[in-house]
Length: 409
Image 1: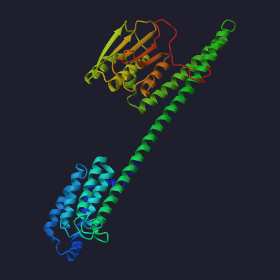
Image 2 (image 1 turned 30 degrees about the vertical axis):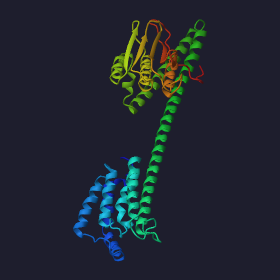
Image 3 (image 1 turned 60 degrees about the horizontal axis):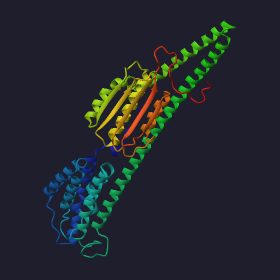
Image 4 (image 1 turned 135 degrees about the horizontal axis):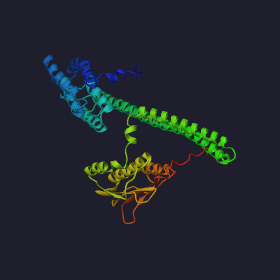
């Protein structure tokens, strides 16, 4: 059963409905308010009756329906409907604040949810309407006809300002909550990586420590006490099997958490042509040059070499401002695989060792006891190169990750 809480009522009800309800709540108020305005200002235009109100309502509902798709047009239609319904075009009648309830509701919702440009445009439109209106009516503070008190139109402008500020506050609170959520997710990922690293260290370092101790003991007593050497070799076998079982369980758990893990592990230098084709289609031609006869590669070396080339080509596309690059894969040196990516671009903002991408590539190479270089070329451009050790056929030694500090080996 899902434990996700349901969103609040404000989020469950669409913005169009809120604006429509605000118009309905304000529709009956202008007639009462205009009765007093007409008595005070005989020159005010008379209201057109129920048919007039129905037409304004249709116009207001059209504006409400556009509040998310065309926010500025929505506010314009609502303003026209409110000013028409209240006879706000007449020079002697002030628009009451309650008559603009739908406009203020739409302004608040637009400011809270829509892009900032739309929010500012809608707010400017409302304030221009109201300032022009205030300048034409009597009894307003800043009007052409000087008054001595704050009139209804002035209150409508203040209410519109409050609606915009409320929407802005809602937006800032949501953005702050999203930033906190993203930071919490990032911290959770970091904590999970540290947990996995600790488990790997505890499992591998402990077992390798036992293997090293038992192997040393077996070597020392193999001539004088062969039975003790056999016992030590049995301990080594048991520790190795236990470690492999623990690592297998960990990998199974990780693959269940991330369905793409197995697909990611299967990538390698055989996918270079596909990578080159996709990058060329994106506008940067990738020339792949292979030297020597390719031989079998350990999966971790194959994957690391492919990732180094992939990230380097991605950096060329993003930063080099060039239309071509060269990828060289060299198998000619026994026991070593070399990959190199060069371009002749400007390499804006790139320096040796800068950026998380290059740091990750260096880490991949170092973990495999390889070498990594990245930096600008003397004649212009940028070069990324890595040399990864590869086990020679028939050799007993197999390159592995660098020892972890504190392993006790």
